[in-house]
Length: 334
Length: 111
Image 1: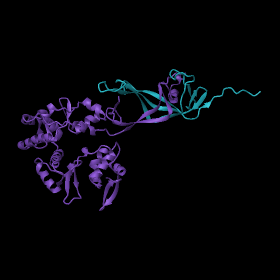
Image 2 (image 1 turned 90 degrees about the vertical axis):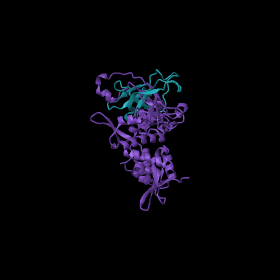
Image 3 (image 1 turned 120 degrees about the vertical axis):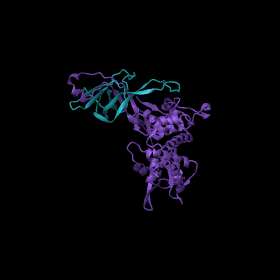
Image 4 (image 1 turned 120 degrees about the horizontal axis):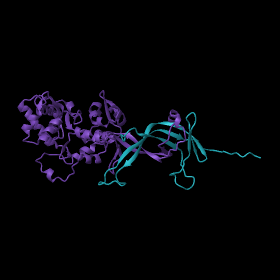
């Protein structure tokens, strides 16, 4: 079955179990009659015995119909709703007195213009978890606190990063934080597996951990001197992990025009969802972009078979600067 | 889809202009006309005293016929949400876009 989703101020979309489609009404000056019992010449030829007079009924008629075009699910709203009340931990006073809405799966299905599978997948991507039946996103500081517990434990136990035992983590850290939260942070920042003996371990995800720590460092400053940042960042990550700038795609941007070079936080999820608005926003932040720099910030705009190149051709104008191909806005940005 | 076996296949008949009932009655329950196919498979529609020739067209983008299920006529936050179920698919249409020709069955001979 299909579901049409949208609030009064949104354009309607039609959702199947796993896809989302923009809906447009198309008008025709012709009359369209639908005839359930009608047979085509092919069908009649195939069955000569049935060539008698048939009396099909016209089920109805119409002069317009809906045209569907597959579109990106509109998932920005999902994060927005869950960010209304991020989970700050069991000790937080906020939860008890909170008057903000909390959302169940059913609530989200009614509010988000996307198919069920696309919504559930996105919940996984943003590391949301279900607490008391409601989907919650962790407050970043609380998330880092949880991560820190785990990385400290890994360090003190001298475990290899690829073999962190779930059982011991729950035992040792279960007194500090809820067990579900310990497991959740391990699932978010590690890959779960079971060894031959049936024990559960996590292979920690180096890139994701380094990225989270970078975010923690960058969010407290407008910008950072790049070389200072790289030094502090490397020192802040767990023993055995190596930081690399490419871990920060879609999270931070290096300003290559400043002397010395600086780096600042720029999260793709904070940018507009609409294509034109996204490009306007990016060109407002920086006039000229190389393809390498802009790609992480427009990758998610690509439709089913669209490439980044195609988007750039449509929404940007290219030129060459010092032998390098750069893109800028097609129109003046105020 | 309903999942209980293959979907019904309907046929679309596309006409130019409007269809009006002969007398001032309703369209519902009235006979539209007679549909024939020639030996070559050309659809021929006789409506009233007009004859229309058409052609069988395989639709590039098939239609799905949706039937609304459940829910109140006016959606409200407390009522269960309505769903649309795909009842039938339309992959073929009979397109009649030539001008209807009047059928003259009796030409009186000049005396």
